[in-house]
Image 1: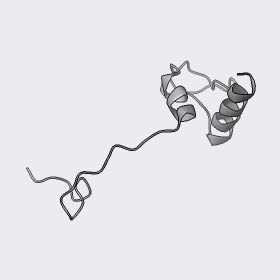
Image 2: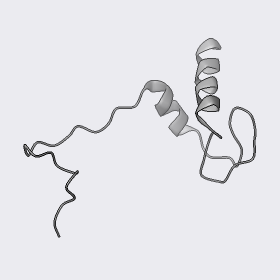
Image 3: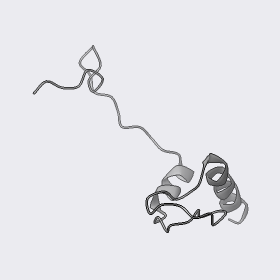
Image 4: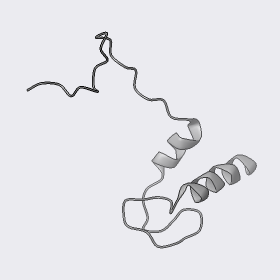
Length: 66
């Protein structure tokens, strides 16, 4: 099986894994609950926030209440 063309750069070096900001890591640790963690809008059982605005507002509020 041949590797995907975008999995290895042309020079043969491996790419480092993408780094997440501390806020994004904290968001990934939240369990999906079927509703947005910020506004409680109903969601599927996979998503944590209904959109970027709620995710950003959640991060801002978390920093403010530190």
